[in-house]
Length: 456
Ligand code: DMJ
Image (cartoon, rainbow, N blue to C red; front, side, top):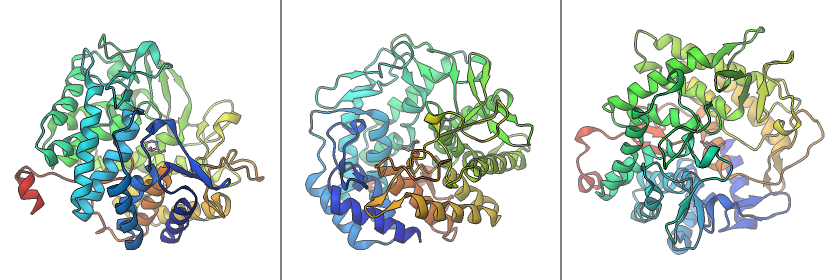
């Protein structure tokens, strides 16, 4: 089924928005997100590995030809370093490792080099935004006192390690290792990592902590850096388990109805809200269970299972059976969005991602059932003639589409669905880690040798 869904999403993108970043499935035209500046083709690059994995060979071939002929980074564009890294660099790296086609390696390294000027700050903590022509960077104007964002500068590690591995240029790895050094020098409030860090002063901005937006994939990349290193990166491992310990103590709570959730922390005060983005953490806890210190393996699996259940409830308690952007545990509600501007669903993957990890790690059939419920809801409410669209209010039976087919729907949501219903030996966890945009990267073993050897 996810294969048919992919076909529908891809065919319509191709028909109405080919070469542009994303598809507007209702108005049947292209959508240009400013996250990628003038870099084009986000959906194509994000979808490459999904096409490959689903064995959509014709489509993969035409996508590859587009990359060869049209993917151009010599543009005057201000881009989001994080978004371009996870979608474009990550997408190209996976396409290279899966297919062995040199063009993808070349483009990934070329783009990686364009991102390097972002690190030209007093601390080496990169800017959020970078003009890839001039090399001038800056931060989001809304971010606390000129800060860079934890989930942005903390989500470069996996791709940059692979860029060094594939290019022989050690600068990439040095840049991301330096980020850790800066973080490890700083005092952390209650052992927690604030979402904001000023790249000039090297000091934290506002003490807001989140495992959802602005924080999320930083934690994910600590764990995955350790896994991707063949479990040799002890620093990554320690940072991950220490962070989880602090998160458990200060952010994880149980509602009176028995639902475990991860709250947000604002200078010591809890906001009892959990974002859809935060739901990825169920899968992360389960994935990290194996290496958990002090006999805590079972506990981390259990934590993953509880977060999965809570996130499933957030879907089940809507009329469309698709989860809201954020849900709350206060004012008498549990796992329900109370604010109008938190009731939307934009085809996000995190809940299905967690089902996939929980399925692989426990084989409890309920995760496939829950995944199936999501498929039915996507087909019923998000599928339109021109592709798949997000929904403005999942509590309202009257459909209101947002008219965007997000590129991560093809790279993540559909890939995780496909994996949920595949055998475990498709991209097995011993050999692959998924970047935060679901692009698989191979585990690097110490004896993997150099680039030449790897290409044989
Ligand atoms: C994706 O780009 C990535 O999963 C990122 O980590 C968070 N936001 C979207 C999906 O929701």
